[in-house]
Length: 610
Image (tube, rainbow, N blue to C red; front, side, top):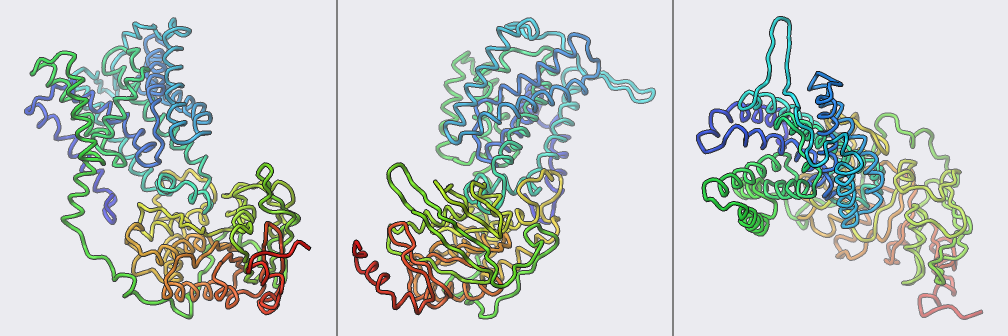
């Protein structure tokens, strides 16, 4: 979406809708086909938010399409309501309610299992509509007699008719739906949904309630489906039973893929291609039912050669033609400054409610044990970290360091024992909740948002600190979140990547990605930062830069670092904890650890049995 021109897409959408009746009839589009395109385009907006932006592939959107349509049609055909618009709103609310109930079930699983659950639920809705509720829905006959809208304003009265009169009404509905969708995707919620698509694990780790946001996207998609289903009944004059069929969901998925996922306009363009070819192949070429075979081949070719759909292909072409050189390559970029810029606390935040007293215990592990069946990864570990300390955690491979770290950040629960953060028992907490309290971790293997720029990566983490775990500020622009821009820029400056801020993460060098990994943890303003092997896999130059970064960020912060680079640990840490075979082998200052015969034996091949 264009930056700096927030209303450009809205203006172009309105202009395009105004020009359609003057252009499309001359290329063979009948008014009925154009109106169907608008209904499918509106239906697809919600699905694109769910799949293209959030990464949740649902084959069950027909359930909400049919629910919204049949609720509205039932109210209108049984004279329970005379206002078509009000019936459409109630049908949409019915679809949203169904979306909440279905989403709470389906979103308990991910990937192919989520998709299969949506298929099963859609088939259940189809069966219920055709059998137990056939007296209400008309069964195989559907609900005939759905009226068109009638508007009365003062002394002016207007009855919407079929054809181009209906187009005006549907175009207005589509425009409103598109404006709302654009606002959602420009909002903080939209930014979080995109982050979830790229890396749900990291989105949760920086403090976002991923499950709640997925459910929100699911309900938004259900709302669009329900409203479009109601419009289908109004357009056709009856509500058809095939609105509930799997073929409806399949057509929606194919149209979105043809037009381009993650664009909002892709479903509309896909509907244009689909419905135009359907009419052309049936009526002009005279293929009859064979048109489905030809259209299927067209779909396969488009997916093979335009993997991001028609709009995605055009975007890729435009990007190549207008490509600008990126900032200097990493070997030419400025090194980390020895004096780091301050990372200020901007505005109220629950984790900044009180300052850490020097010497106070910030993190405490009391007898934590983790067993996987008969394998014990950690056994009875007792560790305490004080405010302002940089604690190093070392040990041979297989010593249980990673499992220990995962327990501290609540990624995995301990089998026994307790974990306390600033006096609060956080054992069993969710990762996002722990992050909101101020305990954050960087990962040994980079967990970034690869399809976003470096700046957007940092912004995602800062949004969690600014807004909390979950907030439905759907109509506010993300840039207007108080303190967000300044916090993002300060974090970029701290990790020394300001000059590379608008470069896609996929184009960063490995050392830059490692710094960004640390930056994501820093952007959430942690009170305690855990770093899992921050120097892993680095060249000597990258290692020197990252060591300087760690020296910068330790000022005024409490850090726990797991690292295999012994020189770096002895240079940075004030106290070191040594793990061996899942237990604490030794603990003390770097000098004490260096002199320890137990540590030396452990690194040279193990400790004697005694």
